Image 1 (cartoon, rainbow, N blue to C red):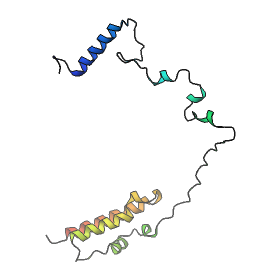
Image 2 (cartoon, rainbow, N blue to C red; image 1 turned 90 degrees about the horizontal axis):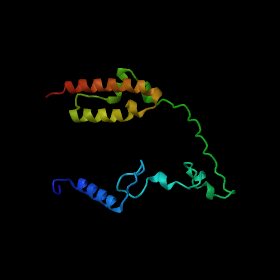
Image 3 (cartoon, rainbow, N blue to C red; image 1 turned 45 degrees about the vertical axis):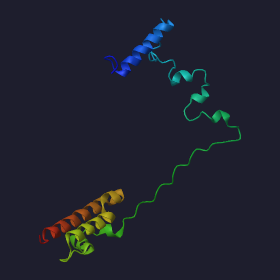
Image 4 (cartoon, helix red, strand yellow; image 1 turned 60 degrees about the vertical axis):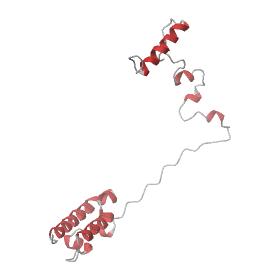
Amino acid sequence: MLFGQSIFQSVLERLKAEEDATGETEEPAAHRVSGFSTGLAFDVMEGVSAASQRVGEAYFDNLGPESVIEAPKPPAPSPEPVMPEHLARTAPEEVAAELMISAADTQQTLNEKRRAFAKTNHPDGVALPFRDNANRRMMIANLLIDEAMRRLPR
């Protein structure tokens, strides 16, 4: 704060005083900010050819007639995704066999099994048509691991 004003306010007053000193009495254009002597970017484009104002075509005027630009080819349609074998096994017994939960498992090993199972079976990591199976497998695995954790001695 300078003399009860912020620095910004004092700069604005100085710019206004300089403007008044130069004798500008005309009203500035609507797109100009008081105190700035340069216009905006669209002022710069005045007098530029209409061809170069087209977005993405500014350099085409400089290319010779021998250069022909081909449009990119659309990508080939992707083949139908094939469901991995493990996603077809949605029975609780099959998921339990994959997890191999035993009485010797600790909380740490159960958490590691959960992470490893989620790495290959999480619904976000599989193709859209197979997400229901992946979701079902993850729910079963989480239930089995949570139940095993509840049975751990405290």
